[in-house]
Image 1: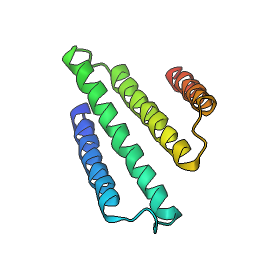
Image 2: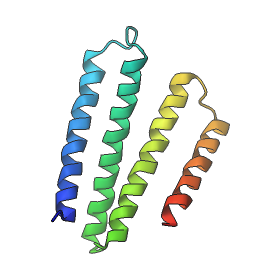
Image 3: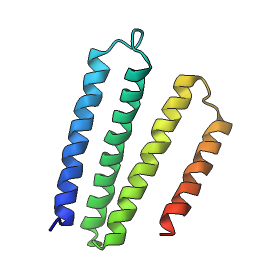
Image 4: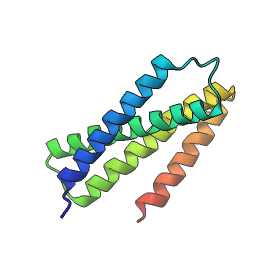
Length: 121
């Protein structure tokens, strides 16, 4: 049977691998010569790295506070994904030249909407 500790270990290993891939992309690929596939791979590896990092920070903080029910596990995962979606979305907006206060507000409203949808379950 898979326990929460096993899942956290898998997420930790996936986060480390994602960070290694992200650093490999950052230091080995020239952005001026990169095609769309390399940019998509860069943003996906950044998203997975940040999602895992934020999940691990949130879950370990909750574990230190002795809150270990399954709802905390799901909330840590949800907030990790949503927070990384916010950061990566802002970086994509900046890269595309659409970074403005209004677009960031739209992104925040979209993320808040997603939080309400997934927290109702």
